Length: 248
Image 1 (cartoon, helix red, strand yellow):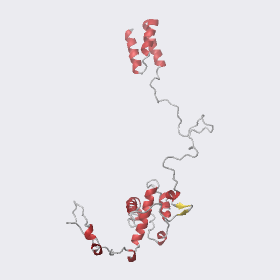
Image 2: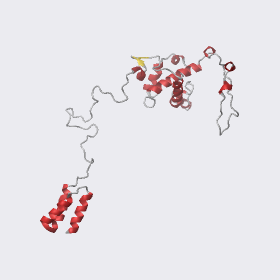
Image 3: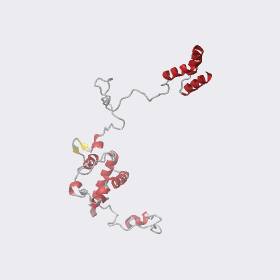
Image 4: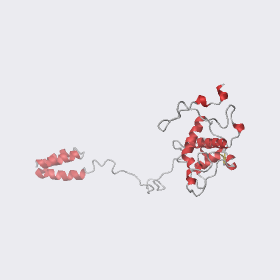
């Protein structure tokens, strides 16, 4: 039965078992025409798992029992003394905002213009919907009937609050405010803290706080050529917008 031999051989070549041709030919010589049929059936039983690959593998379902460990728990605790990548947190103040159990009142890194600009950007995204862009608590969400209006950053209590207090509230939440630890990384939380302090200063500054050479209120901006239209943005002429003293 040559045709059965060819069928069986080609079938098991496709299954990834090239030795099947050898067995088919040997069984046909030993048992006659029926040898190919018997070889086919035997080979199917012997080599049916040739291409299982990783479909069957030793594994554990989550929280399942394991006889390999003495406590029979398949879920293993972290190895003692190891630290996951990115979770070293050597500077505890940077990640907690506290000195011991008390909120600190200093920034963990120098405050630069870039820090304040980044803080303003993050504040406008995450904080202003409730606290408003000037920090008075009259954001969009409270104006639409939110159950509890957030406090103003310009209240005396929050003006005197240490910097670490704002960081801790962003990290752990407070009252109806959820925490933002998953949305805002530690560096950006401190950037926001710096910008909140800048907001407090800007909304409560006196004439004595104005740098020398600047007027209060400042003059209107001077534009290059036309102020712009709906299709073009205005271009401010920074030299013309400077106070008169700075042109001297």
